[in-house]
Amino acid sequence: MKLHSLRLVVLALACIILGSSFTKTNSIKLENQTVYFWYIPGNDSFFDSNTTANEINEQQNISGYALVNTTAAGGTLLVKGYSNNNYPHTVLPSVLLYGH
Image (cartoon, rainbow, N blue to C red; front, side, top):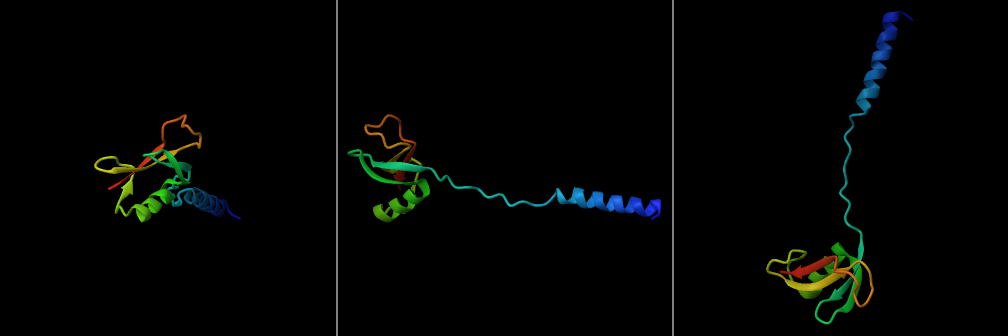
């Protein structure tokens, strides 16, 4: 094998190796899968343990509100989500869901 051919092989391998490092990766945004313990705010009674996304869907079906989210502006407090199930509560709620 001539020296010129060997240089072409090395150059081709270098291009393959360097070119493979620039592949496109699909980044997936993971949903928050933390399970919270949900309490009704009026009498502070236990309602459910669920993730935030599942609880939003459940509250929209139960309450009849078109939009349930964590934005307090102009909304009615539906449930409070706590990170633990201690009663009486030893921490502030982690998530508050409002109906609009």
